Length: 109
Image (cartoon, rainbow, N blue to C red; front, side, top):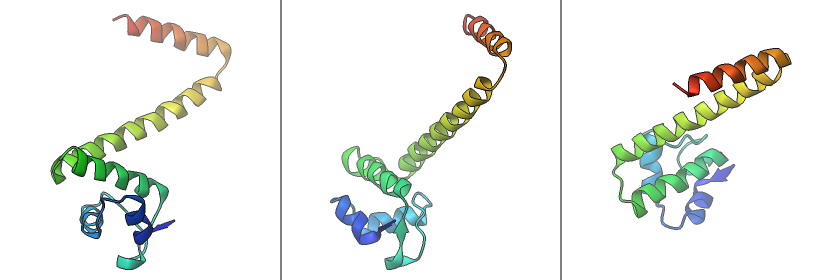
């Protein structure tokens, strides 16, 4: 877990105002309150992304929320595809082969 002070030190251009605004908008989800906030690694990485979007690319708050929502959707889809791949791998060879044939056929449409 990372404290607010550690987060601000790690990301030199971030300010407490940035972080408070992102927490208020639900873009960061620390545990604790105010100065006692603790950030998981996912929020530390997300703060880095948010900082880049705002400071380096000049995105406004609404655009930042859209980008973060899209990133979250991509991560969800990746997890679902990974689970699907594992489920397919557990099937008998004939089923895996039938799925491969169907995917090949469908991809040619």
